[in-house]
Image 1 (cartoon, one colour):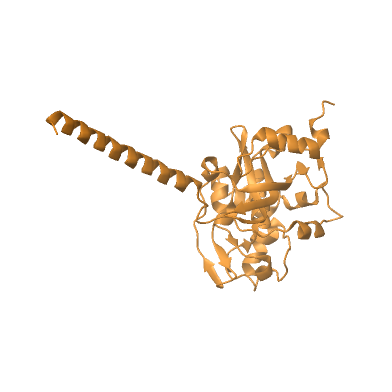
Image 2 (image 1 turned 45 degrees about the horizontal axis):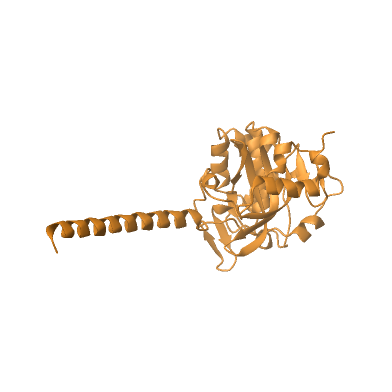
Length: 275
């Protein structure tokens, strides 16, 4: 082999090594971006149980709106301790997730934000006492209440009830979305500390950062309700009073916004009428 051929061979081998390393690095980064987070949302809502707690004496068109209470003293007091959306989320992600079966001795029970913040720290069934504890709907309702108290407009924040899929495990869940940069950003309070009913241990977690779901798909697959104290969308009963951008959402399987809008048009055609 001549010196020229040797140099050419070395250059080719070096190039292949560089390309392989680059490809491996890209694949590693890609996999890190796509994997389910170490602290995923906790699945704990059943639609059948959800409809059983429907309040006929609700003061709102959608009964779940009663649970968004930005004027409540406990929410107001908490609002005085934070400044803006990010700090509000940081407070929420430190709340402790505890199942209804452990905390309330029933499979599904909704608590008002005041009860969640003020009373649950003293529940004898709270394994995280003296910290506020409950499951996903309390954390979502309290966080939206806090965000509304912080001055976030009603059109730009909501609780979402639906199903999510975490690595093949699908179940009902409540989460929060804020409208930023013309799209909905999911905020997931339940990725913080939680009580494991199987091991009977309190697991400390830091929770996901505020912007996590700007870089990752939120694993939602079906939407049942969206709401706050002013607006709502009720997919189950085909009713809504919300702004048009509420009829868009993001789901896990890379469905486009247009596809979602077509589905909403079939469910709630009046929302897209010209009248």
